[in-house]
Image 1 (tube, rainbow, N blue to C red):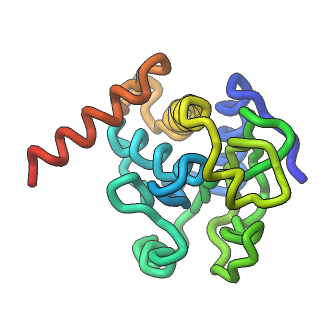
Image 2: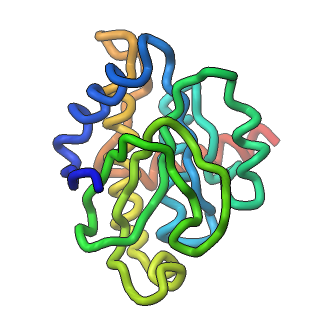
Length: 192
């Protein structure tokens, strides 16, 4: 099992990931989860925040989740040979922390769902305590915590993967991730 990472150490660990796996290529973030469960929305929240900030290689957002029903189609969107970081939520003891696993994500494994593995590594947000039923635990995770963790993860990804030292991405407000998401939804509704 990978070490537990505080939000403050996430950028450094993601830079190490990029150096080890990306070889100068862009990193695709596949953000796994659904918008229909508080805890399982971690991935799509990260994806939406990255998309809002202008990160170009994001699959899995609140608008277009990458879940068990859409996973195969989402994986088909990734170019052959691309470096993929899978992002998902997990239950565990160290709630509010992250893990950066140096191997592919096996989505749905805690629920016994046989789904294809994703990426060369996975960023996991520990969103709630591991109880006897992980599905129920994810359903009752704190939205405030999940939003804060998604904001922290997306900001770390933007800092670690930005090719421009001057910063080419739209900055995210750590204090108000919900405001960013509301603006994103409002912009999308205006475009329709």
